[in-house]
Length: 308
Length: 322
Image 1 (cartoon, rainbow over the protein chains, first blue to last red):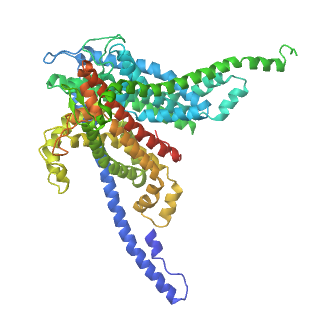
Image 2: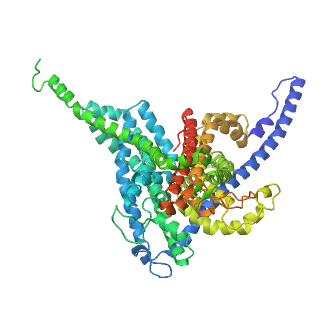
Image 3: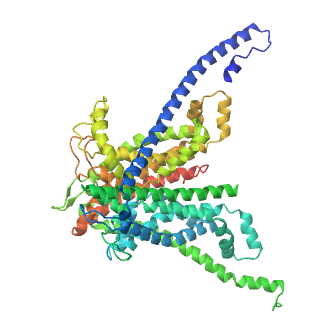
């Protein structure tokens, strides 16, 4: 298109100097255009290569873990507790149940706090709200290992290794994601709905319960699922709190096994059967996290479609 | 003045007296808010309080001391701070340009019906847990690096000065490279948000003047999203510094600085040394306190990096970060 413009005939001016100058400019432009287009093409190829470079390891990672992991799965893998190396028939049932329990309790702790703090951010402006918002953002970036050490310092150091201390650590990890996600979800409720609720004579708390929270449910589910997806895969905090166990335990006051711990411990042994368990556990964990993320995102997509 | 039962005024007063429950609601919100602030303070207090023993014992020399001896009870943070800096630098040198290029390609150079699924895919893969990436790095990348990549790096002029010696498996380079893979999705996702925040009209104006896509990126989009890109890089840096478990599996965890310096040497980071020594620190109170002192160093670094990143974001509110 731009080439056509450049080769457009000169306007019917009679001035030969202007026409000459015009041709000069056109020639120059044609020259740079060719150069600029070549450069743009080169850059496009370069950037495309970079994109492929980004994708290749990521796809290879998911593919390889799936291949090795699916091969390691069996019925016993899901129903039995670990066996020592060399003894077949072991599974990671205690780790699967442990991960569910630890994360379940973490969710129960973090969800109400997250929702209330998010409501606070919506209802109040001012320095406290700003501090909380900023604190939540910074907390998102604090390494999980430090959160694990925090749980160790306030709980385990005074008692002993336990599953509930792991839940506390994971709850702290979930909190900032929930706070910011919940806040964003509830901000999508238009002001008119708040006002309509208040105009009906309902109390603020009632409006929040029946209008705001109910209306924002898809967004709230998304925020909580994404927070859960982050917490489920964390390993470092568990090493200082739940610490792992070979036994099947349902007690929150005792050490408990979890899937990431199995991967960390079995993956670094020299025994083929334990390594195979680690791959199976890695696949289960990855699949679980991806499913959580996908469900979370579909909820978010539904939310944005509705609000349009 | 007594108001008549059922009159509007009476209803209003009833409503007012029910404010007490409104006050209860406000109190609940305030409690939650203050509780969250207390948690933030407790994280710092909890970690710092466990470290005072080590800081008191070694003083500030702890930060650059290279001793790490469980027999003589001498500990220092030097090798681990250096290890953290080296692998973070490797990861950033790879991830920032590649991430910027990928994000530019996705937002500016490829049709939306390809860009959207690819972007979502990259976002999803960013959710793959660190430990899974570490396991993959240990079993897949480490042999490949030993056999092909590291000998190849030794043949490149100038670069080979950084790759002296013989690779033995775990190395700074391997850990830094896998770390770059882990922060790439973050970098791409945040940079895409920043680039997408640049106005469509600016772009169209440039295209109307005859600019090529590359010129639009270089002269309009990147300058427009400058601070967003900086914020993305800073937050990716924060992630790289704190990433622990995958690095622990790949870096070899030696507690000294190996001479002569080479990226093929094993090393250790602040995070990896904490994870690795925590189990045996039960009988060694000074070692445990030292590990918490290392955590304090890590905490300070990540707080500075993240506060910096967020402040950059704050200044420009035209885009939002996840």
